[in-house]
Image 1 (spheres, rainbow, N blue to C red):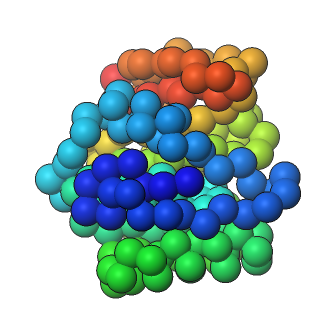
Image 2 (tube, rainbow, N blue to C red):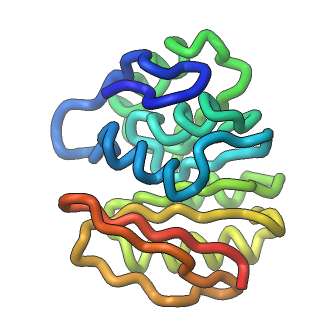
Length: 180
C-alpha cells in the first residue's frame, strides 16, 4: 500500500498481517478522496478505527492539519506508529491506544473529517455518530466517511446527518454523511 497523493504521495504504508484489521486499499482510498475532493485547506481528522492509519495519513498528505487515530489492537498500534514515523511529521498525528468508546469520552475538540470503519459496522456506526454528535465532537461542516462491507445497508439519516453519497468498490461500500 502507498499514500496515493499529496505531500506524502508515493510513500509506502505498512499494513498488519492477518484478519484483525482490514486496511483500506489504495484504489478505495483514492476513490474516497475523489468523493471528498482531492485537496483540503486545514482541519482536524478523526480515524476512529485506524488499523494501519492509512486514511488519516492520506488526509494529512492532502492538506488537513492534524489527525487523531484511535486503535485498540497492539500490533496495529505498532504499524500505525511506523506509518506516522514514515511521514516525518509526527507532531501532526496523535495515536490513542484504546477503544473507540473510551476515546470518544476523552476527546474534546470538534472534527472536520471523521473516518468510521468498525468491525461490526451498522450498529456501531450509528452508535458512534450519535455519541460524537452528543459530545459536541463534530464541526458544523463535518463530513463522516463510513466504510463497510458492501452488504451493509446504513440508514439514510443518523441524528442530524444525511447520507449524501454512497458507492461500492469491490467488497467495500463507502458512505458519506453530512449535516442535514
